[in-house]
Image (cartoon, rainbow, N blue to C red; front, side):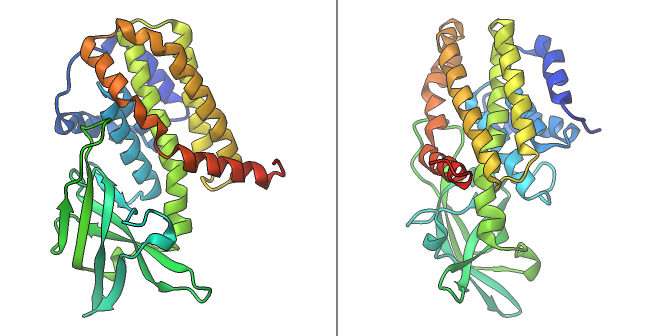
Length: 313
Protein backbone atom coordinates (compact mmCIF):
# COMPACT_ATOMS: atom_id res chain seq x y z
CA UNK A 1 0.00 0.00 0.00
CA UNK A 2 1.28 3.47 -0.83
CA UNK A 3 0.20 6.93 0.16
CA UNK A 4 -0.61 9.85 -2.14
CA UNK A 5 0.05 13.55 -1.86
CA UNK A 6 -0.38 15.01 1.66
CA UNK A 7 -1.93 11.81 3.02
CA UNK A 8 0.81 11.91 5.66
CA UNK A 9 -1.04 14.89 7.16
CA UNK A 10 -4.26 12.87 7.26
CA UNK A 11 -2.42 9.97 8.90
CA UNK A 12 -0.90 12.22 11.58
CA UNK A 13 -4.25 13.82 12.34
CA UNK A 14 -6.02 10.47 12.56
CA UNK A 15 -3.25 9.08 14.77
CA UNK A 16 -3.53 11.74 17.48
CA UNK A 17 -5.50 9.50 19.82
CA UNK A 18 -3.00 6.65 19.55
CA UNK A 19 -0.12 8.51 21.20
CA UNK A 20 0.96 7.22 24.61
CA UNK A 21 3.84 8.04 26.90
CA UNK A 22 5.26 4.53 26.46
CA UNK A 23 9.05 4.39 26.68
CA UNK A 24 10.93 2.82 23.77
CA UNK A 25 14.14 1.80 25.52
CA UNK A 26 16.30 0.62 22.61
CA UNK A 27 17.02 1.58 19.03
CA UNK A 28 16.35 -2.05 18.05
CA UNK A 29 12.82 -1.89 19.46
CA UNK A 30 12.16 1.44 17.73
CA UNK A 31 13.53 0.06 14.43
CA UNK A 32 11.00 -2.78 14.54
CA UNK A 33 8.17 -0.24 14.71
CA UNK A 34 9.73 1.93 12.01
CA UNK A 35 10.25 -1.08 9.71
CA UNK A 36 6.63 -2.17 10.18
CA UNK A 37 5.28 1.26 9.20
CA UNK A 38 7.78 2.25 6.48
CA UNK A 39 6.50 0.13 3.54
CA UNK A 40 3.18 2.01 3.65
CA UNK A 41 4.94 5.21 2.57
CA UNK A 42 6.24 5.43 -0.98
CA UNK A 43 7.62 8.94 -0.54
CA UNK A 44 10.70 9.04 1.69
CA UNK A 45 9.65 12.38 3.22
CA UNK A 46 6.42 10.76 4.40
CA UNK A 47 8.43 7.82 5.74
CA UNK A 48 10.61 10.23 7.70
CA UNK A 49 7.64 12.09 9.17
CA UNK A 50 5.90 8.86 10.16
CA UNK A 51 9.13 7.59 11.72
CA UNK A 52 9.46 10.78 13.74
CA UNK A 53 5.89 10.44 14.98
CA UNK A 54 6.66 6.88 16.11
CA UNK A 55 9.68 8.12 18.10
CA UNK A 56 9.57 8.79 21.83
CA UNK A 57 12.84 10.75 21.61
CA UNK A 58 14.70 13.00 19.22
CA UNK A 59 17.45 10.42 18.61
CA UNK A 60 15.02 7.99 16.97
CA UNK A 61 13.43 10.80 14.96
CA UNK A 62 16.90 11.69 13.67
CA UNK A 63 17.45 8.04 12.73
CA UNK A 64 14.17 8.06 10.78
CA UNK A 65 15.22 11.18 8.89
CA UNK A 66 18.74 9.96 8.18
CA UNK A 67 17.70 6.53 6.95
CA UNK A 68 14.86 7.96 4.84
CA UNK A 69 17.26 10.47 3.28
CA UNK A 70 19.67 7.70 2.36
CA UNK A 71 16.82 5.76 0.76
CA UNK A 72 15.91 8.85 -1.32
CA UNK A 73 19.52 9.11 -2.49
CA UNK A 74 20.05 5.35 -2.82
CA UNK A 75 16.68 3.72 -3.55
CA UNK A 76 18.27 0.28 -4.01
CA UNK A 77 18.70 -0.10 -0.23
CA UNK A 78 16.56 -3.13 0.72
CA UNK A 79 13.57 -2.69 3.02
CA UNK A 80 14.44 -3.14 6.67
CA UNK A 81 18.16 -2.52 6.09
CA UNK A 82 19.96 0.39 7.75
CA UNK A 83 22.85 2.01 5.90
CA UNK A 84 25.54 4.61 6.57
CA UNK A 85 27.10 7.20 4.27
CA UNK A 86 30.86 7.30 4.90
CA UNK A 87 32.38 10.59 3.76
CA UNK A 88 34.41 12.32 6.48
CA UNK A 89 38.08 11.54 7.02
CA UNK A 90 40.84 12.92 9.20
CA UNK A 91 41.12 16.09 7.10
CA UNK A 92 37.37 16.61 6.84
CA UNK A 93 34.56 15.90 4.40
CA UNK A 94 35.53 18.09 1.44
CA UNK A 95 36.21 16.09 -1.76
CA UNK A 96 39.84 17.25 -1.70
CA UNK A 97 40.21 15.68 1.77
CA UNK A 98 39.13 12.19 0.70
CA UNK A 99 42.13 9.84 0.68
CA UNK A 100 40.42 6.44 0.91
CA UNK A 101 41.25 4.74 -2.39
CA UNK A 102 39.79 2.22 -4.79
CA UNK A 103 42.13 0.25 -7.07
CA UNK A 104 41.52 -2.50 -9.59
CA UNK A 105 42.95 -5.79 -8.37
CA UNK A 106 42.56 -9.54 -9.01
CA UNK A 107 39.47 -9.26 -11.17
CA UNK A 108 37.76 -6.96 -8.67
CA UNK A 109 38.47 -3.76 -6.77
CA UNK A 110 40.28 -3.18 -3.47
CA UNK A 111 39.24 -0.37 -1.11
CA UNK A 112 41.65 1.01 1.50
CA UNK A 113 41.33 3.93 3.86
CA UNK A 114 39.86 5.28 7.07
CA UNK A 115 36.62 7.12 7.74
CA UNK A 116 35.47 8.86 10.86
CA UNK A 117 32.31 10.25 12.46
CA UNK A 118 30.07 7.87 10.51
CA UNK A 119 26.43 8.11 11.59
CA UNK A 120 24.85 4.80 12.66
CA UNK A 121 27.79 2.71 11.40
CA UNK A 122 27.30 0.36 14.35
CA UNK A 123 23.69 -0.35 13.38
CA UNK A 124 24.13 -0.35 9.59
CA UNK A 125 24.35 -3.41 7.39
CA UNK A 126 25.50 -1.49 4.31
CA UNK A 127 28.19 1.17 4.05
CA UNK A 128 28.35 3.62 1.16
CA UNK A 129 31.87 5.04 1.16
CA UNK A 130 33.26 7.97 -0.80
CA UNK A 131 36.66 7.05 -2.24
CA UNK A 132 39.14 8.43 -4.73
CA UNK A 133 40.15 6.66 -7.91
CA UNK A 134 42.84 9.19 -8.83
CA UNK A 135 42.97 12.69 -10.27
CA UNK A 136 41.05 14.37 -13.05
CA UNK A 137 43.06 16.10 -15.82
CA UNK A 138 42.49 19.42 -14.03
CA UNK A 139 43.92 18.01 -10.79
CA UNK A 140 40.64 17.56 -8.94
CA UNK A 141 40.15 14.49 -6.80
CA UNK A 142 38.06 11.95 -8.73
CA UNK A 143 35.41 10.77 -6.25
CA UNK A 144 33.32 7.63 -6.51
CA UNK A 145 30.88 6.06 -4.06
CA UNK A 146 31.12 2.32 -3.39
CA UNK A 147 28.81 -0.11 -1.63
CA UNK A 148 30.37 -2.32 1.06
CA UNK A 149 28.77 -4.90 3.34
CA UNK A 150 29.71 -4.08 6.93
CA UNK A 151 30.65 -7.71 7.58
CA UNK A 152 32.95 -7.89 4.55
CA UNK A 153 36.54 -9.01 5.30
CA UNK A 154 38.75 -6.01 6.01
CA UNK A 155 36.02 -3.81 7.52
CA UNK A 156 36.59 -2.76 11.13
CA UNK A 157 34.23 -0.51 13.10
CA UNK A 158 36.11 1.80 15.46
CA UNK A 159 34.29 3.33 18.44
CA UNK A 160 34.38 7.11 18.87
CA UNK A 161 33.51 9.23 21.92
CA UNK A 162 29.78 9.59 22.59
CA UNK A 163 28.24 12.90 21.57
CA UNK A 164 26.68 15.23 24.14
CA UNK A 165 23.34 14.90 22.35
CA UNK A 166 21.35 11.97 20.87
CA UNK A 167 23.73 9.43 22.49
CA UNK A 168 21.38 6.61 21.44
CA UNK A 169 22.69 7.13 17.89
CA UNK A 170 26.28 6.01 17.47
CA UNK A 171 28.98 7.74 15.43
CA UNK A 172 31.93 5.49 14.66
CA UNK A 173 35.12 5.36 12.68
CA UNK A 174 35.68 2.75 9.97
CA UNK A 175 38.90 1.10 8.87
CA UNK A 176 38.92 -0.39 5.36
CA UNK A 177 41.86 -2.71 4.62
CA UNK A 178 41.93 -4.47 1.25
CA UNK A 179 38.15 -4.72 1.19
CA UNK A 180 37.29 -6.44 -2.09
CA UNK A 181 34.21 -5.35 -4.04
CA UNK A 182 32.79 -6.04 -7.50
CA UNK A 183 32.31 -3.53 -10.30
CA UNK A 184 28.56 -3.61 -9.60
CA UNK A 185 29.32 -2.18 -6.15
CA UNK A 186 30.66 1.03 -7.68
CA UNK A 187 27.78 3.51 -7.96
CA UNK A 188 27.34 5.22 -11.30
CA UNK A 189 28.16 8.87 -11.74
CA UNK A 190 30.40 11.40 -10.04
CA UNK A 191 30.63 10.75 -6.32
CA UNK A 192 30.56 14.40 -5.34
CA UNK A 193 27.94 15.95 -7.64
CA UNK A 194 25.79 12.82 -7.75
CA UNK A 195 25.83 11.84 -4.08
CA UNK A 196 27.79 13.90 -1.55
CA UNK A 197 26.55 17.37 -2.53
CA UNK A 198 22.84 16.51 -2.92
CA UNK A 199 22.81 14.40 0.24
CA UNK A 200 23.49 17.41 2.45
CA UNK A 201 20.24 18.99 1.28
CA UNK A 202 18.28 15.75 1.12
CA UNK A 203 19.30 14.97 4.71
CA UNK A 204 18.27 18.43 5.94
CA UNK A 205 14.81 18.09 4.41
CA UNK A 206 14.19 14.58 5.72
CA UNK A 207 15.34 15.44 9.23
CA UNK A 208 13.03 18.46 9.17
CA UNK A 209 10.19 16.10 8.30
CA UNK A 210 11.07 13.53 10.96
CA UNK A 211 11.56 16.12 13.72
CA UNK A 212 8.25 17.77 12.77
CA UNK A 213 6.55 14.37 13.05
CA UNK A 214 8.18 13.92 16.45
CA UNK A 215 7.04 17.35 17.64
CA UNK A 216 3.50 16.59 16.46
CA UNK A 217 3.59 13.45 18.61
CA UNK A 218 4.56 15.56 21.62
CA UNK A 219 1.87 18.12 20.80
CA UNK A 220 -0.69 15.29 20.98
CA UNK A 221 0.80 13.80 24.12
CA UNK A 222 1.03 17.03 26.11
CA UNK A 223 -2.03 18.85 24.80
CA UNK A 224 -0.43 21.68 22.83
CA UNK A 225 -2.75 24.19 21.16
CA UNK A 226 -4.39 23.32 17.87
CA UNK A 227 -2.75 26.33 16.18
CA UNK A 228 0.68 24.85 16.93
CA UNK A 229 -0.35 21.58 15.33
CA UNK A 230 -1.57 23.48 12.27
CA UNK A 231 1.79 25.26 12.02
CA UNK A 232 3.63 21.94 12.16
CA UNK A 233 1.50 20.43 9.43
CA UNK A 234 1.98 23.52 7.27
CA UNK A 235 5.76 23.27 7.70
CA UNK A 236 5.65 19.58 6.81
CA UNK A 237 3.63 20.31 3.67
CA UNK A 238 6.21 22.95 2.67
CA UNK A 239 9.11 20.57 3.26
CA UNK A 240 7.35 17.91 1.22
CA UNK A 241 6.96 20.29 -1.74
CA UNK A 242 10.59 21.42 -1.59
CA UNK A 243 11.85 17.85 -1.31
CA UNK A 244 10.17 16.94 -4.60
CA UNK A 245 12.52 19.31 -6.46
CA UNK A 246 16.14 18.89 -7.57
CA UNK A 247 18.20 19.13 -4.33
CA UNK A 248 21.08 21.04 -5.95
CA UNK A 249 18.85 23.78 -7.39
CA UNK A 250 19.51 27.23 -5.87
CA UNK A 251 15.76 27.81 -5.44
CA UNK A 252 15.66 24.81 -3.11
CA UNK A 253 18.33 26.30 -0.85
CA UNK A 254 16.55 29.66 -0.71
CA UNK A 255 13.26 27.98 0.26
CA UNK A 256 15.11 25.75 2.73
CA UNK A 257 16.58 28.86 4.33
CA UNK A 258 13.04 30.10 4.95
CA UNK A 259 12.04 26.76 6.45
CA UNK A 260 15.04 26.89 8.81
CA UNK A 261 14.08 30.36 9.99
CA UNK A 262 10.46 29.36 10.49
CA UNK A 263 11.50 26.21 12.34
CA UNK A 264 13.77 28.13 14.73
CA UNK A 265 10.94 30.55 15.55
CA UNK A 266 8.65 27.61 16.19
CA UNK A 267 11.14 25.92 18.52
CA UNK A 268 11.48 29.14 20.51
CA UNK A 269 7.69 29.51 20.68
CA UNK A 270 7.15 26.03 22.14
CA UNK A 271 10.16 26.07 24.47
CA UNK A 272 8.08 27.00 27.57
CA UNK A 273 5.68 24.12 26.86
CA UNK A 274 8.35 21.54 27.62
CA UNK A 275 8.05 22.48 31.30
CA UNK A 276 4.78 20.55 31.38
CA UNK A 277 6.28 17.46 29.76
CA UNK A 278 7.29 14.30 31.56
CA UNK A 279 10.64 14.76 33.32
CA UNK A 280 12.57 12.27 31.20
CA UNK A 281 11.05 13.58 27.96
CA UNK A 282 11.93 17.17 28.86
CA UNK A 283 15.47 16.24 29.96
CA UNK A 284 16.13 14.42 26.69
CA UNK A 285 14.81 17.36 24.67
CA UNK A 286 17.04 19.86 26.53
CA UNK A 287 20.03 17.54 26.09
CA UNK A 288 19.43 16.87 22.39
CA UNK A 289 18.40 20.26 21.04
CA UNK A 290 22.04 20.97 20.15
CA UNK A 291 21.52 18.60 17.21
CA UNK A 292 19.87 21.43 15.26
CA UNK A 293 23.09 23.48 15.25
CA UNK A 294 25.12 20.74 13.53
CA UNK A 295 26.36 21.75 10.05
CA UNK A 296 24.84 25.21 10.49
CA UNK A 297 27.83 26.99 8.95
CA UNK A 298 27.80 24.82 5.82
CA UNK A 299 24.07 25.36 5.50
CA UNK A 300 24.52 29.14 5.67
CA UNK A 301 27.20 29.03 2.99
CA UNK A 302 24.88 27.10 0.66
CA UNK A 303 22.16 29.66 1.29
CA UNK A 304 24.50 32.57 0.52
CA UNK A 305 25.60 30.93 -2.73
CA UNK A 306 21.98 30.37 -3.70
CA UNK A 307 21.16 34.05 -3.21
CA UNK A 308 24.27 35.04 -5.17
CA UNK A 309 23.01 32.89 -8.03
CA UNK A 310 20.02 35.20 -8.26
CA UNK A 311 22.16 38.32 -8.10
CA UNK A 312 21.58 39.12 -4.42
CA UNK A 313 24.63 40.13 -2.40
